[in-house]
Image 1 (tube, rainbow, N blue to C red):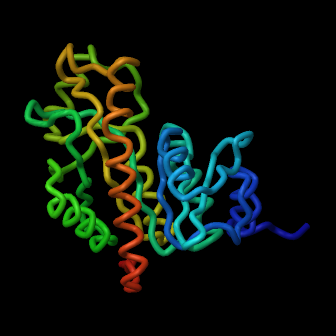
Image 2 (tube, rainbow, N blue to C red):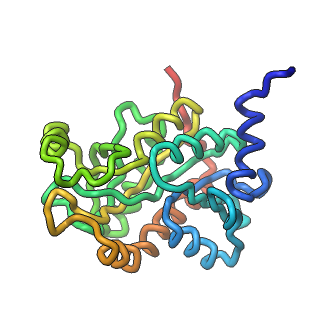
Length: 243
């Protein structure tokens, strides 16, 4: 029995998970885990959403840019970054939400996470420059990733976060970067602060999350589309360095 390679599995599974054929994927990928983002993308470009009956959904604008909604949590984040080797993307940008861990971090602020020895520094810098040029409030720093839920009243965990001096907390970013590094995929992230869970009144609720989605989805999506489109138009590769 012949052994099936990781690449062969990815080429088989990416369409299986998303409902989109490999040749429909663009070279530049936006990742999200919120349905409103992929719906906004599809409406903007007048294209269908693939995979509505699949674990993940995807849409392509026909001009080299694809968005994939991969679900929530580190397991799904690792899965999509493994499956994307099937198309060898030139760049991947995660548009996610996070909880702010500093009193000075407000809902609606943006965070391009810093990663030590970031191989995709160009993408990180490009996104930061776009935020600055357009006058959006943003801070850059360390984002703590965890699969934990309902930790807001765990005082020991809160103290741990305080000692780490992390700027924000989410459930996917570190995994996307680690698996992307292993697979030599150039990647970046632009996170939107959707709640400030270190204060009782800042814990996310259904009502507060709906307000953030209403007020900030279009802006967040615009930033991602514009950043990846301009990088594609410049034509300069986002290098991935190995050591």
